[in-house]
Image (tube, rainbow, N blue to C red; front, side):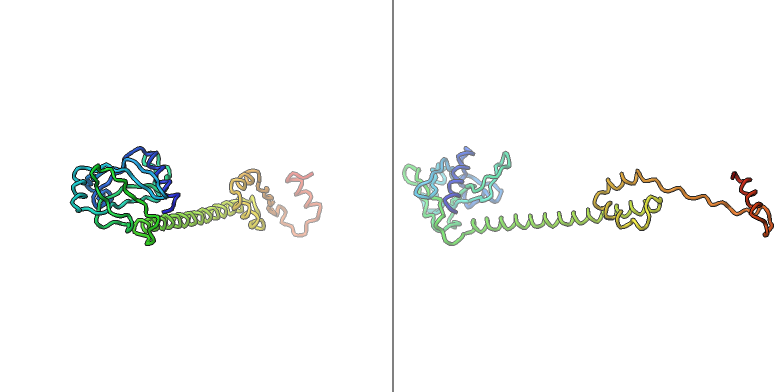
Amino acid sequence: IDAADIEKMKLNFDKRSLDIVIDYEHQTLSGEIAPAAGWIKELFIKDGALYGRVSWTAKAKEFIKNGEYKYLSPVYDFMGVDEKTGAWQGCTLHSAALTNKPFLDELGEVRANKNFTKETNMDDAKNPKGEPQAQAATQNGANYEAQIVELKNQLDASKQEVAALKEQLAQSAVDTAIVANKLQESQKQWALSYAKADLNGFNEFLKGVMPPQQKTSIPSNDMFANKSQSDAEIDVVKFALGGE
């Protein structure tokens, strides 16, 4: 945690305008019943450290007086989002807990003085060990990176499927055009390139292409079964078929 994180935690606390719960043994994180030991009413920064003004419950005061709980352990959320809008907030102070096994080593003991208004130091900026909260943040970052990689892989696979489908559609359109005599076999490679690049444009192009009329073959009716007929006789046959 650096100075920017501390500033961000205070800013997010002030914007939220809600007290932060202090529970017992981080029970809030378990999602089960988590009675409050106290509430953080205010956060402020002093000498680069984060402090809070705490209002303890009567029960928590007794625990602290009797030495049954010795430490106050904060929980940071390095990837906090606004619960109402879903907007990114960054580092936030999620909660804190009375415990005898704190996440951080250098927080010092928590004591309830006669006025129960002691300012409790919750800064771990000087903690060199990278305790579980920092490890949790690193793990969260790794999880997000893994999710991003997975999404990229899915996107690449989808792109490959789309490319394969476009190629199939282009091939089908070209083959159909050749069968319909709108294209010659010699035009196939050009047509494939066109259809792959712009299938809609290729289909519009085909609409304007008329297949050539097939030549009508005139059967050689041997009207005069005379193999030695002259050109004049052939002319007579043509005249009979409509010639001039």
